[in-house]
Amino acid sequence: MKTRQYSVKVFETTISDENKFISFFDANYKLFKEHLILIKTDKKDISENLKRYLNDKELKYLVNRELPKRQSSSKNRYNSYPREEFQKKEIEVEKKRENLKVLDSLLRSGQELNIDGDLLLLNRVNSGATININGNLIITQIVDGDIRCNGNFMMLKASPKANIVFHEVEVDNSYLKERLNRVELKNNEIIITPVLKETNWA
Image (cartoon, rainbow, N blue to C red; front, top):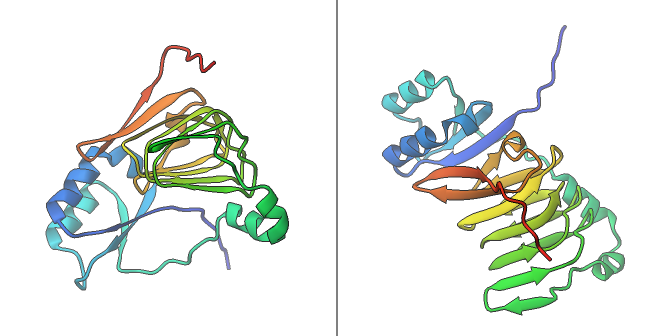
């Protein structure tokens, strides 16, 4: 018996409006070519029209299937810390102005930062660290960890180790190229624009 193990990128989505679904995939097609599309719907199956669309685009998909959830490495590292020791590593926000938080601390492996508003981080994000943010995000140093952003935009530069998810879409690190990039959502399309000029953060 021959076996082979695959590591597959999965994009999970719920269909409420078929036209919006197709419009979103048309705009972001390049991001999904290497993904398995996991479609959730309250019906038994998707329409023939949608099947033809996905097949024409040569996208691989499953409908109403449950896949095993992989626990992230950051959570594993978090669980390995004694609670008292981890509390000593909690991140302190140095400045807070209305909806903006400014942080000048290194985000270390095992740390998780949850932000409702906007964040300006003047340091790096190590591998195994996680930022979950509902607002806009600017990180001035390299990102090696996990980012989950649902704001209007984010500005960052990421290494190949990073795992960047913007509005539930995993961003391919090859588009970030270890230089500062602006990532934003316009008309259901994710736009990545390199910031060409060197930025002086001092």
